Length: 116
Image (tube, rainbow, N blue to C red; front, side, top):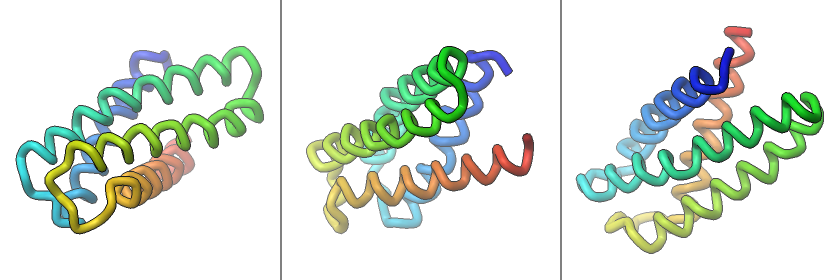
């Protein structure tokens, strides 16, 4: 798959999964839903493109190690944004980020395993 396809599939599937999860958590405000979408538009392409290029240049093992740091980066950025910008206050923004990212990443791994 080329990078553009990978990025599009990853971004769309991440947004869908994380929106569904956010709704399950009780995030209902339109502004909060837009924040979930926008923060993923910010972080997902960065994580996916960096991981893609690390895999090309250094191989799969390096990519797997880099993914730990890239996902940590996404979790921290998204948690910060959620803490500062969401009206939803039932759960701390970092915990929301951990739940959304953890589950969407796990579903992504499962989908990749089933497809490839």
